[in-house]
Image (cartoon, rainbow, N blue to C red; front, top):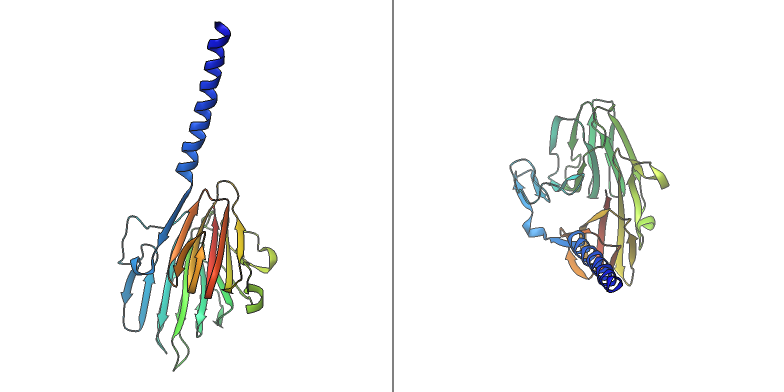
Length: 261
């Protein structure tokens, strides 16, 4: 009798372990869609800006950020206009140009004009002043500004800029930002990786997620399917507990994938 009781108790423990594992997997496995038309929007005349997360006067308690990813603003700035000198601190700021040109000047003495294919990283650290303008007198600039919270505060401000050609992103996830600057990416002060890809037709890219990590996929333009979910320009997909991200069925698509802790 004792052996039978022990057997059932053992089976109960196994069943409970299985149930707990199942419940835990359901709690951690999640895919969510953030549609383009659900984002915040601000029209200042010279600037039209969509906010994926809460920013400035747009406040949405359900979308304050995703892990260390704090801001994805899709900005269109009219010719000759821009952001006057203003300050930042303790933030990793990445600019990614889709069309046109963006001129940058900062209190560290940096000055440049970035265009499609260029990735600019500014670590605000203890504090930096900068300005961003559209130097063209004819063409609007269309770009993404991304803020990632650093894993260390009070660092010395820093600046970096690199170019990633079309071929390196065609049908492939090109690492463009990472904590160690590997593979020629810009270096950010956070355990996060940012990839860019260009996809059309039969091209498929796959990205494995390590245990405990999550992903945010932002469609900069075109259309794709991510893990079976159709997405269009401005849409995003968040994934946690997934083992792999599969991006396919692209139609003129440019996609950013954030691998986050």
